[in-house]
Amino acid sequence: MHPAFEGIDRWVPRPARSLLTIWDNAGAVSLHQVDLPDAPVRDAHAARVIDRNWVATSPLRRAANNASAYLAVHGVSLRAVHLHGHDIAEESTQHFIGLGWRYIDDIHHCLTVCDGVQWLEVPHPTLRRPLRGLTITVVDRATLTRLRERI
Image (cartoon, rainbow, N blue to C red):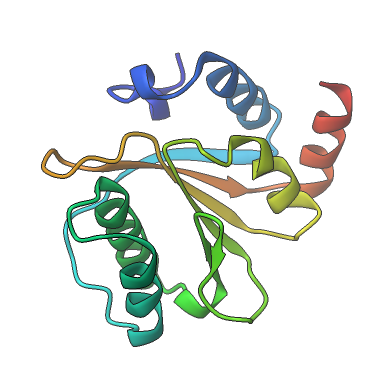
């Protein structure tokens, strides 16, 4: 099993684990598991998008908030993020956040055709337990495009 799936493997569908491992082994992407601690989203526009789409008691809201805060801390403008089916702003989107594998079929398209650089998936949104994320970062877009054509 790929080290990025340790501890979260029960929430990563087997076909996704297999495909992502193929992509990683081919050098098309890099996979890393990350902690998503509770932290405020400081971008007011992004905070409004989160408030508008999820109620306070939703585990998806917490996951969206923490994933957005994580990206912001790592230098990503939240205006360039596509958050679980919603563009935060009308800018070019290069970063994608998925919650609970809802958009699993879109990962390849977003990272190749849409010129995305990273997908951050929160495999198991929860209200109280520690949140973990899986980053899928493009290393070689041409290889990633070819791999999809073969599978």
